[in-house]
Length: 316
Image 1 (tube, rainbow, N blue to C red):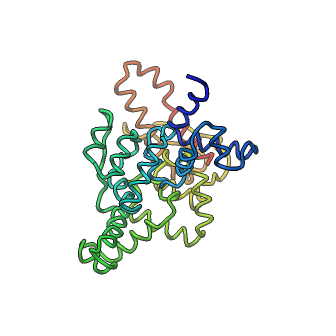
Image 2 (image 1 turned 90 degrees about the vertical axis):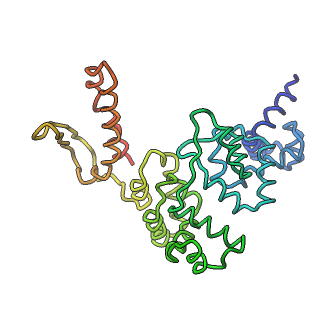
Image 3 (image 1 turned 60 degrees about the vertical axis):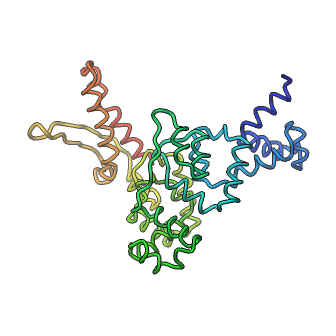
């Protein structure tokens, strides 16, 4: 196979690579039109045009792929075809109702979900994979259900929807408002953690900070969002997770009785906000001690996960 044919095969398998190469060549002046780029890259204009449509897909959809670099032109073409046929809101409802919590899905599973074929999506998962139906109590579910009912003519507003679903009008209104928050803000939170309580705080933040500033803060913390709880993310967005000073002292000592450890540290009030992260780190240590025969060796490193959690909290 010639090098041109090999490159073409690679580009056909990865829209993301095509987009990167196209923008790189555009910035360097290697081409000024899609026609020139398609000749240089050895792919058709139709393939290039399809690849560039990758960025127009909903963020929550592309985030579901286990290997975004392997999203092909065919995959983009199929998704856009389904969106054109069934409507964007319907597709969003399908993928949000059946999301693998905290995990990524193979391409076949994502395409099956986009098409509304849940059984096919389950078949496409690896043995350890699982697709979970979203809780009907979550704001996102209620918001999607409201919009789908409007499209299908089941109701015309909050009041009639409230009567049909037996959900308070206030909750429906708030769910719709939470659903209208920017994708980049909502996607910071795990599916089950974006509750009404969290959503109301985000709406209040949007009013206080303005949409532009909220988007900027969300962009800043996006890369590490999966490591933190909803409360921690809210503090980040509010700008409250600012270290009051240097952390020069940390010591754990035995408390009174057999069930207490006491943490001596600087800025205890500030670090108390990170208690869930610290508890998670210590629980990992306890699990290792329970299953490992080398308890002495683990004991010598018992403070490492705990100190790492403290360091991350202090450095944010």
